[in-house]
Amino acid sequence: MTEETTQEAAPQQPAEQPRPKRRSRRRWLVWGLIVLALVVLGVGGMIGYRTLTARGEADSKLAEATKLVENADQVVLDTDEVVRSEIDAASGGLASQLATDAPGAAADLDRAVMLIDEALPDLAEENQPRARALRASASARMEMLELALPILKATVKAAGAVGPAAETWTLIVDAEKLSDDAVAQYNKLNKNAVENAKKLSKQAQDKLGAAKAQLKIVQAALPEADMQPYIDYVDSKLASIALSVKADDTYLAGKTAEANSYSDKFNEAEKKLAERAKRLPGPPSDVVATTYDSMAGEATDKYFDARDKAAEADADLKALTD
Image 1 (spheres, rainbow, N blue to C red):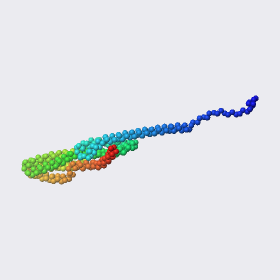
Image 2: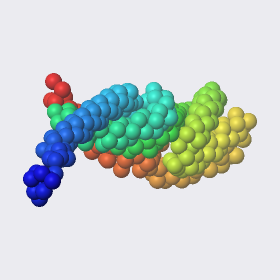
Image 3: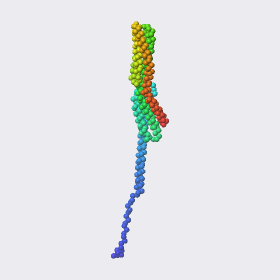
């Protein structure tokens, strides 16, 4: 063996192996930051999108609410005119139509208030004061219409009664005058005068018949108004005049004693009639007015309070939009 072969072999060093590559934590951190940034951007974009969408919907709701208030306003204005006007046939006709239209207009105003409540949280800050003023205006108008409904219904009834009630009193007064003239003619105690007395009494009877017919109209139009005292008075006056006519007829027939008897009965009936007249509560129109007030008075007071609120809200709204 050679020296080289006999020499103890030195241990060999293992060949250097390449180290396995370690994923860099920093690289993972970078990728994590990128992903997080993308998520944040996505969420932010979504929030921005949703904010813009909510604001757009809020603006649409406010616009719809504004349109509803505008559409209801004609009914509100017409109703206000009726409430503040004298009761007559014209106001009664308009009140009748408004009594039908007012509930729908009030419903529109109620929806306008609801839409504004829904819109307010998402409205741009600069639009919120106007929205609140519009809400106050719509709410006050809705209250006005709700309070006006019993007023309108009472107006319809009173409008159908006020004209006939006034006509009734005119007819009764005319009949009284004719009856007095008939008595004056009868007291002349001659044939021509008594014949004139009979004609005047007949005219008075016609007037009273027409008055009673008008009272029936009042009673039908406004059952809450008690017309019975006037009907009783007219019936009593007709009975009294019938005695006067009897006196005329018997006098013209030459039955003087019998004529005097009827004349005495007529005078006694007239005394009782005068007492009955004192118990009448004024002209029938006064009863119609009093009845109307009892039906609509409380609602009218509250109506004008709501009207003042609407005027204040309108002033605020005008100041914000000018």
